[in-house]
Length: 193
Image (cartoon, rainbow, N blue to C red; front, side):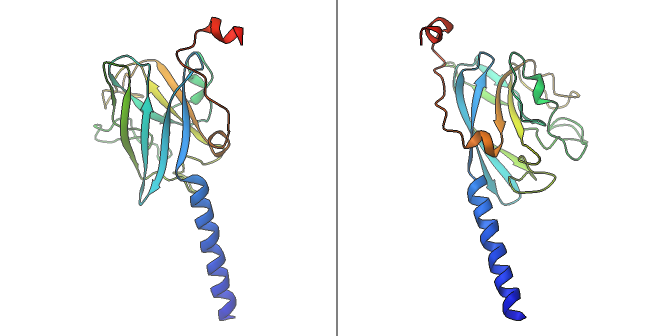
C-alpha cells in the first residue's frame, strides 16, 4: 500500500512537471489592427506570479496601457472581442486604486522614439497552470496594448484609449508554426504574393 502511494506521488510530480514545461515559457505573437505581427510577449511561470516580457515595434512614442483581457479573441479592427480586463476576483481597476487591481492590470509600457518597447512586467497572483487565476483557464485570455497610458484609477479600464495591439494567450496559439507577417509590408505588397 505504501509503495502504491509513493508511485502515485511520483507519477503526479512527473505530470505536473510536464504541464509546466508545456506552459512556461509561453510565447505569444502580438498583432496590430492591420493583422501584422509586430512583436511578442513571453509569459513565464514564477513563484506566486507570471512574468511577461514584451517586445514590440511600430507604435507611437510614449506610455501605453497594457492589460490581460478575459477572452482569447483578437478580431480587428478594434479587438473588442477580447472582452474586459481579466478580473476573476471582481476587483476594481487600477494599480493605484485603493480597491484594485484587476488580476490583468499591469504598469504602462514606454515606447521609445524609434517605435519600439522592450519591457518586463509582472502579474502577481496569476498562473499558467490550472485554476481560477490561470491565464490559460478555459480556452485562454489575451493581451492588449492601448493607444494611451492607463491612469491607474479610472473605471473600468484607466482611460487607456483604443485597443491597438492584441495577442491570444492560449496553448493552441502558442504552438502554431505560422510565420509572422512583415509589419513594414504594405497591403499592395501582400496582394502581389
